[in-house]
Length: 314
Image (cartoon, rainbow, N blue to C red):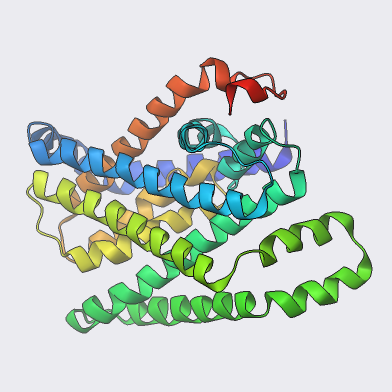
C-alpha cells in the first residue's frame, strides 16, 4: 500500500475521531435539525442551484480546451466528465484526484497530452484565483461587522495570493521565453498552450468562475434558510471557499478537514448545532454530485478501460 495513502488515511481517521469526540453530542442534535430541511422546497432548490454551477464549470473548462486543443470535445462530454471526476476523484488518495480523472478521459478525445494537462491546470488555477478573489470580496463586506483578529490575516493572505497569481499571469510570456531555452518538450508544449489564453479570454474564464462561486454560496444560503439558520450571505462567501481549501489537506479528498473548517468558521455567528447541520447539508449536496457522477461513470463512455474511443465522444 502506498505510504502517502497510509498517512492520509491515518490523518483522516484522526480528524474524524476528533470531530466525533468534541462534537459527538451536537451531531445528534444537528441531525434532527437537518431532517427539518428535507421538508422544505428551498433545500431541493439549493441542490438544483449546485448542479447548475457544474454546468458553468463545464463551460469554463470547455472554453479553455477550445483555446488549447486542435480537437476539443463536445460540451456534453465535458459536462459528464466533470460529474465523473467528482465521483471517481473522491476516492483517489490525492488532492488532485479530479484533475487526474479529467486528463485520463480527455486523452480519449485527443492525444495532445501536454496541452490537456496544461488546460486542466489552467482551469484549476483560474478557479483558484476566483476563489481567492471571493474571499477578499467577503472581507470587504463582512470584516467590518466582526471583531475577529484572525479574519484580518485570512483576508490579507488571500489578497496577497491573488496579487501573486495576477502577476504570474501577466509575466507568462517572459516566463515562457525563458524556459524554452532549455528545450524541454513537454514544458514547451504546455506553456505554448497557456500563452494562447489572451486577456479577454482570461477575463471571460474568470467571470464564469465568479458566477460559479456565487451559485455555490447561494446554494449554502438557501440550505441555511431551509434549516431556519440565520447566517449572512457575506459570511458564507468566506466560509464556502475557505472550506474548499481542505482539498489540499493531507487527508483523503479533504474529508473531515473540510467539515471542521466549515463548522469552525460558521460558529462565529451561529450555534454549534446549526453550524454542524449546515456543514452536513453541504456534505450531502456533494454526495448528490457523486451519485450523478457514478451514473455516468458506469456508462459506456466512461468505462474503466482507458482506451481511445473517439466515436462515442464526438
